[in-house]
Image (tube, rainbow, N blue to C red; front, side, top):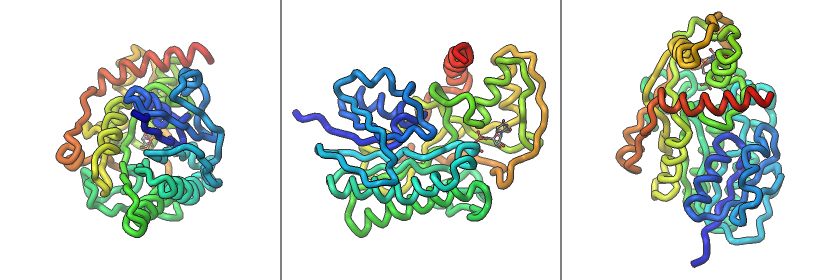
Length: 315
Ligand code: UDP
């Protein structure tokens, strides 16, 4: 039987590269598109010699030309950490708008199923807690996070329009905070920052008073949920994340404990529009996909710590 073919935009990024691995494991051929703005070739190095994998250096805000048949288009290209999208605000807006348009156009041309990597950021600084998919969010369009949040909100709207107007088979996953190997040490997110600081016995920089909350999902659980969504028939957005919520201050303490570090916590200014709480309501994912996370934070952090230790040694 002919193998299915998936195009993964942003396939050399943290999540994109794990997704490429998973698709290949499932016997699907992968065409990975990435312009390496925030992605890294190291993330896909091990796949470059795999006959079921092809990498093309491409900025997906430009026209995407693929000659072969395509069964799935998974749009993961975008700067995704607050530091990255503040550094690349225009690229972030372009990849969420023009890039989503090109990726949808490719899916339509190939009659492929399209999956959009959306985000819990569509809920902004949420006024309901935990966040379910019916909530429309509380986003400041002109604040520093607006470039990411609004790009993803537009991407969701465009995806639904292609579904409703062109009958395209589409999926939207709203991804909550995720961690694991291949995160960049310097991407500025809490987890890589805290682990790097702890391993170097440097001060741990908690922003604000640390009472804001997040809920961290281990990457293997997330990718498992995304594949289940892809293979389902659900066209409305689905939250995928781990509902186990923790304050950022407690999270910093947990990492100090885990690494046996001598680091002390220091408190820095809270970034503008930093969401005060975040926790996914995963009722829909449970009911529709039969999915829920399996890896505890303790176990996930232990595995991830080994990756960060190796990365730091290479620096
Ligand atoms: N944060 C922090 N110290 C850091 C980096 C982040 O206290 O060095 C906080 C940040 O203000 C936010 C939370 O940790 O409240 C999670 O931030 P992250 O950048 O990981 O992702 P976000 O969930 O905000 O997109």
